[in-house]
Length: 273
Image 1 (cartoon, rainbow, N blue to C red):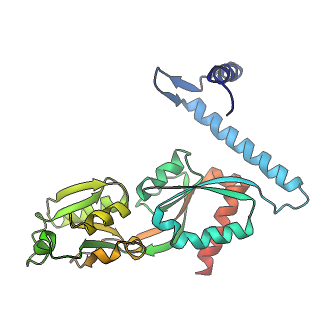
Image 2 (image 1 turned 180 degrees about the vertical axis):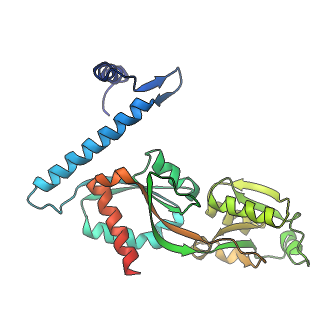
Image 3 (image 1 turned 120 degrees about the vertical axis):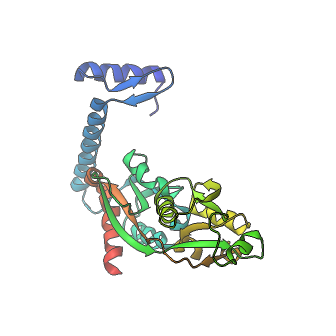
């Protein structure tokens, strides 16, 4: 918004006076939406979506969609299965600009819930939050990986039985992979030796490749990693539940024709497989 902070504050104050409700809770350092503020945001988003839809329908070519959508996904997703989806979407909707943010897949669902992304690529959680819709694109196993060298980690793994409590692990800070690995430790009655906790599966591959420990990552990450020659997969008695990776969106955001167009493109990709 190209307005000064004082102008913005006056506009918000006038809006709150007209509504008879407080939209923001403010202190010296933070500004947070109230319940009324969240309701007004939903109303404003729906109104803008209907306005965009009306403009598109009144044009001579109703298929001609223009504007921006915000997409969040991991680096691996961008140059693996998402490349097909993005290519198809760009060919069908050349005037829609995709604003792409890459980061840790563990943050993807929260990005959508917090309205920081319109659509995100994420593994399907054990319980999908009610406001979200999920469309599966690819399944990938979760693999244990180790350094491809003769270092101390390899020496520990060569013992029979493997002293898992002594093996250093490089783990995700949070997210579905971390949850499933924690469950594996509990099922094996193992107290893990956590060497490091990092954000992103790509970071786990990098640290394991340096010989610093063992990690768990989706097979899709291994296949697309430039460091895959420095790591190897290892077999364990009880395998982890695989990832079901797809796109997710808030149900109400499908009222936006741009978001809906991306969603339908993902649906076509899924049906073709």
